[in-house]
Length: 120
Image (tube, rainbow, N blue to C red):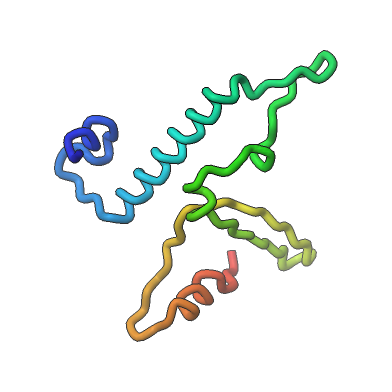
């Protein structure tokens, strides 16, 4: 398994240190890509004709893989301009979060710190 991992992924070649987090990300992304490819092969082309234009289904219309169903979340980034008070929001999907873990702290406390207000 390790030899196949090194052969197929440059990050795991040589003597560079990789931990379980990098391995999990690689594994989940690879499984998700393979499941998407398998679904596309079964369904045929995603392109449908609508009049004279070609329409591609949006990501929201594509069925989720079991990897996405179990591990995927949505993080909403909210940015507020300190001058004009305009607020913009952007949603991003994620499979994992990198939390700062402090000694004797709870997961709730770590999540609060992660989602706290930052001044840019």
